[in-house]
Length: 252
Image (cartoon, rainbow, N blue to C red; front, side, top):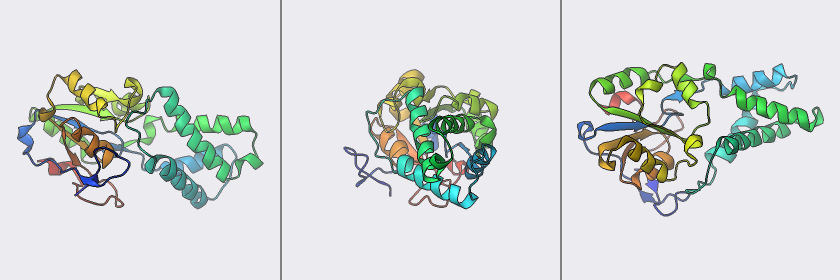
């Protein structure tokens, strides 16, 4: 059972039970995007290759270690603020800040000027907005088609940067979703329950009508539960622990 605390999502202690109603009890299924529908399978290789192209030559294993540590520190283990505002600018500053830390740890200041580090960090940010690096999980398209054919309305509620619509369009699945609620476009992000309230309002649905699917124990289980939306967790990677399905095939 997933453990969360409804008054302090950064300190999970109380349970949020997974959805128990049958699928046909819902009118709509809303989805998270990153690590639920899409992934970047070669992120460490992309990062290493970008640095090499810009003449910062480092061992691939070292680059991967530093990048993984930085993302875990600043993103995965980041304290979650329910009322934190977001925007395209704040998203850019957040990720370029992480990339600057990685470059510093890799010794870039010994070889590059501050301007070069700034330009490289921004370049990396733009690189990871490119749809070419993203892939659908193998079970996504077939299940979206199946759920649509069954009469379900499909929606999207995601913490993501400005490139998400282009990525989903490139993969041929953007048109499956209505509404599409993306954090940087609406000025708030999960775990703020208000982003789910907005999605319900746009869809003109009650919370009891919707099942939400995502990978994150707090953003995708705790947060929708605060407004009465049932959820199911999907575990896409070996390091995911606890209860949850491993494929969208398990929805039916």
